[in-house]
Each structure stands twice: as structure tokens, then as C-alpha cells.
Image (tube, rainbow, N blue to C red; front, side, top):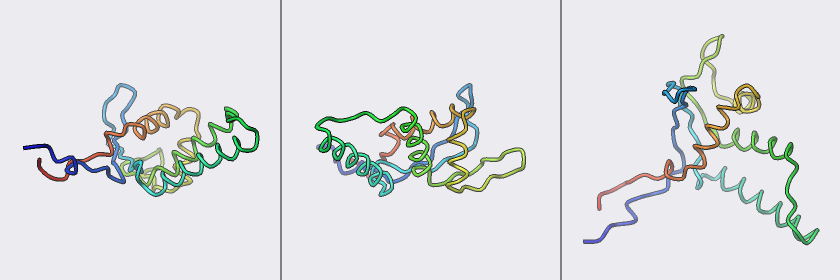
Length: 134
């Protein structure tokens, strides 16, 4: 009997537990948009359209300025973060808002966090799930 490839699905979201500096779980869970999530698909299409428009205009693909790339990275991480739970600061529990997420991702002292979330978003296996038996 063969394997049913349709028993594994790409899911739209994934809950990622943030790790501390030693790789230990923190209990802070970020809900991230998967590659098939409409927000991520729209962002990828917009980036592709921008590259195509640039190539049509100049005849070559132009790389963005590094500062512009970092600004876009913060925007993307913010858009691809759909929520969180378990995150508190010195004032107590922090409610998720896009503004709060942008503040985290834009803080140079929290580069470790944005790098961790960026890496999790790039791990396609996190966004697959077996939904049946083979």
C-alpha cells in the first residue's frame, strides 16, 4: 500500500515558543502566519511585483538599500505575527497589537528575538501537519 501524500497539509498558522539565550523554552508563544496564509502570500506577491517593476524599468534587478531591507524586515515580521501569549514586561502582561510587535522587532537590543522569529518563519516544516493516517 502506498503513502497518502494528501495526509500531510500545509497549515496557515503555527504557534512558536520563544527560546531564551540558552535555548530553553520561555513559555512565550507567538502565533505566526504560514507560507499559505493570505497575509504572507500578499506580502510575497507585493515584493515580487516590486522586483519585476524595477527590472522592467531599468532592465536589471536592483538590490534594495540595506536600511530599506531592515525596515521591510520589521514590517514583515510584524505582519506575519498574528498574536502572542505569555509575554510580560516590567509592567505586567503585554497584549498583542501590531504596534507592540513592531516595537519588539525594531528594538536593536531584541535582535535575538527578531532573528529567532525570522528563522522560525523560514522553517517550512513548522507549517506542515499530518491530518490523517497513511
